[in-house]
Amino acid sequence: EVTAEANAYTGFTLDLSNENTKQTGIITADGKLVLKLYYTRNTYTLTLVAGENIASVNGAENSISQEYKYEQEIDITAEVEQVEGHTTTFTMWESNEPGLITNIAEQNKTITMPLGNVTLTAKAERTINQYGYSIEYYYDEVIDNNKTETANADFGSIIDTYPTKMSEGYVLDRVENKPLTITIDETVNVMKVYYKTIIYNITYELNDGTLQAENPSTYKVTDESFTLNNP
Image (spheres, rainbow, N blue to C red):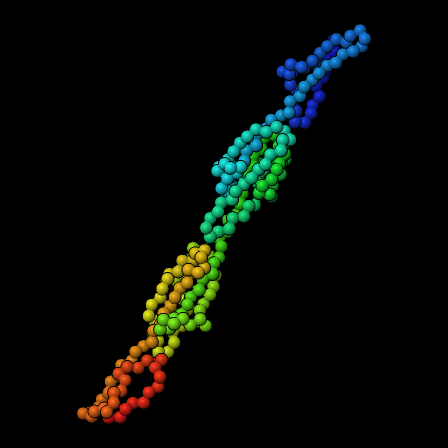
């Protein structure tokens, strides 16, 4: 009687439960004998984990585990979290078994199932964005574009100060949108500073005299020059 010795094949296991297996036999008189051994491709578990700043992996919000045959091709995908005012950049699939499969840089990739159970954790980095803002200056409700200040600031930051640009003869009237919270819409990231002219009252001491024509009772720096009428 002859017995076949099983060979070792990477990723395969001898399957003696196969009904077609014939591991032992007797050589016939004509010197013939066929022995048959069957091997089953091994199955391993792939676990995908949604790590920091990752919304989902292969459609699962947290993690997903599934069995695959050795050398089976598998599509892995990751969706990064989208957060207002921030940019999220995928960094890698980190392997817990780099000897079986190394870290993967691509966000979406087709991999081959390695020789063993493995966990891949998707990771991404999040950075805060900067947006432009402006401070506009108005004098008697008219903007002076030459005095507008522009700058950039982090999303969500608070701007609660502004350079003073008061001109002679003017006084601060009001400030709109202060404090200013930086949003993603730069058209609304505007602080408005309003100045108004000072109105000076004019008092005349006539000493019992009279005026043939009226003189102005008030004066502003923006008024045109005028000549007083003598009493």
